[in-house]
Image (tube, rainbow, N blue to C red; front, side, top):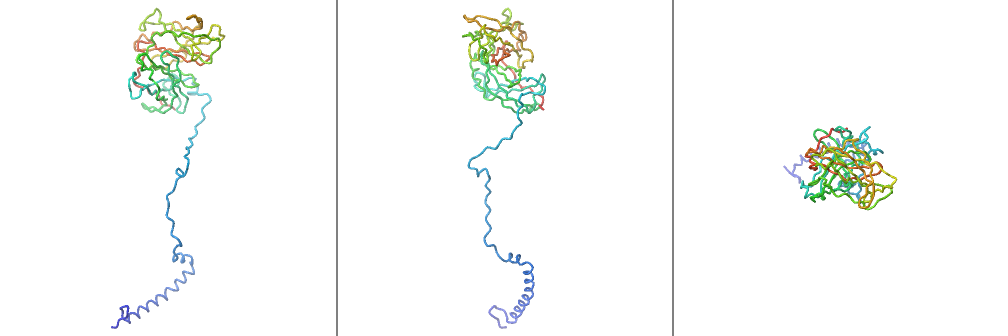
Length: 362
């Protein structure tokens, strides 16, 4: 059989051509009908896009687009009350230092810094203040016989302990290097700003007893009312000179000085304030309404005549127990007063191995 150029017999080529013509005649009317009904879709199906689709790029966030970083605004908190109150109807707060922890747990003779934690207690029970109460809490320190000064302001944190959750206030990196001296001692206590506070006293020292020091010598007098005073306990004298473990009563004397000086109050001053003596026992806060008022007395020391305040027949019998320690300090009704702390006991160091657990706040 004769073959054409495509390698097929001519008879077969005629059959193929006839099949193609028949197929074209069948499809052409269908295509014409589709184009008339949907001209755009047909065009889109057969026409390629004019340009390639763009390649997706990485999204740049605002954080990296800013040339100068800005701080995220902090959420606003409810305004503080104008008169802070530890609890509804509660006119005072008790503060209790629970721990003084030297950095790296080194001994007193080596410590330079310590972290201090205090609890606040509402009323006489074991109840903390409300969870959302956020007062300013100050840590005070009195070095040796000097008047106390604020050394830190606390940071509030919520503490979960013993199944309870309540607030605590931390004072970190407090300088305790003064206690490295064998004769040095630091007495700490905490107060709440603008709220009457009954604190406990924590004495940090190798030997924190107040050994009868030499009384302060006034360097002059003033007949003007000071803006603030240093209230200095000068002597705690047990009756008949009895030792601590035998004394039942003692007489205590306080001098007032213009704050930061040794200028005492002249007998001619028209202002004669009420001076009160406070005390606490061991690690417990001062009990409310236990402070006593002193009696003013004019005395002369080294040719300088000035006013002093006496507190006679003060009960010190608790210190007869060698495990007990009494702490005394003074306040003045009319002006800010910065007092020293007098420790009375056979061993006045504060031993408090485990912080207590308060009830949960609300």
